[in-house]
Amino acid sequence: GNWKDPRYQHGCEEASVLMAIRWARGRTLSVQQAEQQIKAMPAWQKKHYGGYVDTSAADTAERLIKGYAGYTKVNVKYDVGVEEIKTELAQEHLVLVPVNGRLLKNPNFTRPGPLQHMLLIRGYDDTTHEFITNDPGTRRGKAYRYSYDILFAAMRDYPTGDHEAIKEIRKAMIVVEK
Image (cartoon, rainbow, N blue to C red; front, top):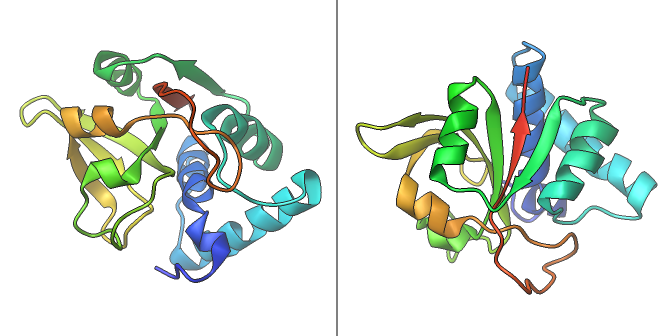
């Protein structure tokens, strides 16, 4: 909730990666540990890449998951649909997706919401047609539910940079396995 600090303002990729890596390694995460890591990741990125900014799905996987965390059971898939996401979740994988946060219509976001945002999908409910997420964009993001339609409509990869122009809408997901 500290949106004035740019480490947190641009920290949705870092927070999503941190949750996924802790899960993959079978470790829990306290609020204090999360804060320390979310501060450490931008410092590492600044040292290795000259700064910390929003990162595309491919760069999130390469820089943060493989580079920073040293975790290799990850891949990026493009041009995916709801069924592909559900298939990965059914195989007990986690999925991270880049989205236009404004299209999520989350009432807990500070208005108008982020254009570049990433969140973790941890499950789905075919009865309600909802994905179960951990959304780092709000304090109420744990197990937050988005309808399949809303989340899919919001999905879009974005280029690495500080609010770089998006030239094409392409659905991407980062799959993290144990």
